[in-house]
Length: 435
Image 1: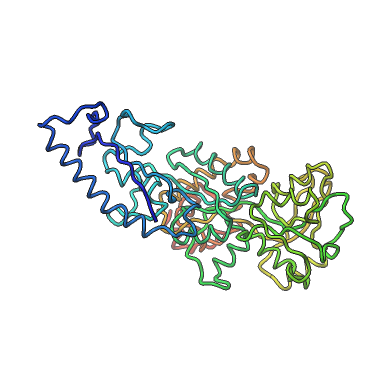
Image 2: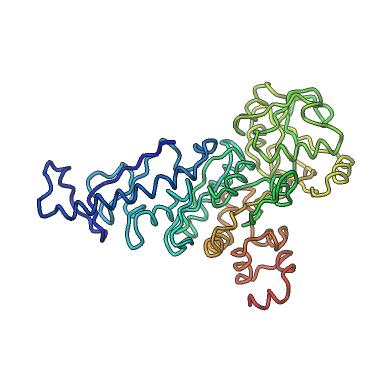
């Protein structure tokens, strides 16, 4: 795996900017020889330590999914001066070296941290500016839309966090990237989170919860003029069940299994490359229905706003009871009337809340600041996005057990006076100690 590093000469060991004589057609003066030798030796030391760390931290399968992938150039830049060879769009101070050294600044800024975490003194230096990497999903889906708005709100409230949303393959890859430390926070559908945190079919994931996102009641969308009225009507028909790594497919399996159906046996399942492909296939008549979930889900919005409009098919009341008997981890939830164009009544179904998970090694201080930014940005997120009104500290405290919350979130909740299920589960001694 090849990584390139471009080093602009023109900085000394004290971080003082100097002109690069070679750029201007002049050779260095003889009395500058010692300084040039120091610079060359310093760069060689950096190279020797840098490339093994990067190579050890990158997996081929994920290399194109997060910053620092092959083909990108790692620029170690001189300190505190624009120089004469800055890339177009480069912002002064973004990755300059001052105080704590070039690699420390880059690692804390996210450029190295995401391709192989490099330790400095065995711990992260939280007082330095950093970049928080947020894993979302494929283009056109609800997670990418939510993640972009969430990052914008975090950065407005707490600019020093530098939240950066990146496209991934979805919930299952986000879990993998979180567990390997390649992203800091990730959006995970509730059923995928449930399986990972509870260790169902796998070892329990050592991850923590930052916040809830929104409830995900599952259902199908068909064109409004189609003949389909219930789930059984779709048997034998081509149905888009989401992307391969989407957690919504887990919800589909549980819902259908609860009523004695499976996607493979009872439907013609279509697996998408991108979430955004689903509504187009329905509108073009290439599939009869799209499976999805959530409030204001982009795929459903596009079908509902198409010329034909949409009709939504959810489990019947009797089927909901049947599903819950077999899959007791699911919860009843509904889509409010008016969520989608032409939807005049609430739609009852089952599902789970999607979650924002965080790698547990992310420091308490960073998570505290993230929790604070999300809480203080609640109204801004709700204004930007319909489903954003559910992403609140109160809902998190009510929906998530204390054992699953990151300690930085718990610290913020105590200080902000947020109460709910999570805080009630804290032992009195721990509560007293926190106060």
